[in-house]
Image (cartoon, rainbow, N blue to C red):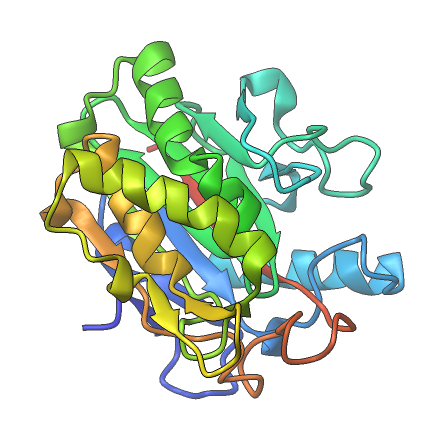
Length: 276
């Protein structure tokens, strides 16, 4: 079953909710659609329009807009620990966002972690034992630098989260049906697959790197690759949910950097927990 469902059963709805998590202890988690408009400040949109979109999302979620906390994403693998002093950074402007960061973790309540996407893979982490949360942005560069593994390791080091207790989810992103890559990317991906297979020989490269008719190119399943990295980090396969939505196939619902030739908006992933 698809874990990310429209909040209202209408394709004009602006929010996809990670429903199994939203039923847990005040957690909210999900992903916006293009009906929520562009939510990022770095794509040339009028900043006033972006802030209106973010405010509208906060209202629909019944959260304070002041809770939105954002990073300046750079396709890296740095993980930042959000404290109470960081709450609200990046919500109004890029200058105040957490710099050079592609994963945020926290055990604070009433903070809404937010990241921005247009094909890359959103990764969600929640440890119900320690109450800690993590949200990450994984393009191919972040994936091959193992941001999923580093996020879990940081949650373990800072909060004592045991990987086998962690719930994880992989959100809407470009699918293997649409994500054709060249030798430059494959030369980074294949050594990672070899490393994963050394620890788990049943992993099949052909299920992650799919043959293409174009010489030197292949279709890449970034969702599947991130799932294997989550398992490498110690998360149980039964505790990982993975979306089937492809942002490139469904440009009626999503922005797609690949499908729209780099000129497009961004969706927002979010994750937070309200205090009781």
